[in-house]
Length: 93
Picture 1 (cartoon, rainbow, N blue to C red):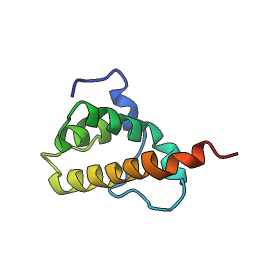
Picture 2: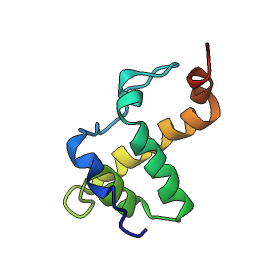
Picture 3: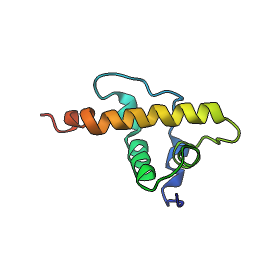
Picture 4: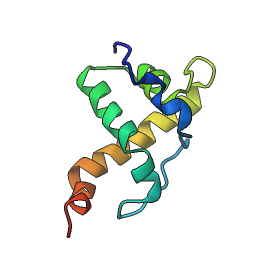
């Protein structure tokens, strides 16, 4: 995955090791919406989990491999939920 001009975005946003889960959009989702979009972009670019951890979540996979893997997978799961179900709330009246 190539470096993006907005790469420093996550430096100001704290990223949880596991996304707080709910069956509706959460404050965490609203605060991390750009992270979810960047993960989608990274997937489209065929980025590895290690690249996503480093570039999108700001976690060094060499220093913290377990945390990096857990955080990437958790955020990807939430991103998948968002694009298959959660998006409906964005368009509700």
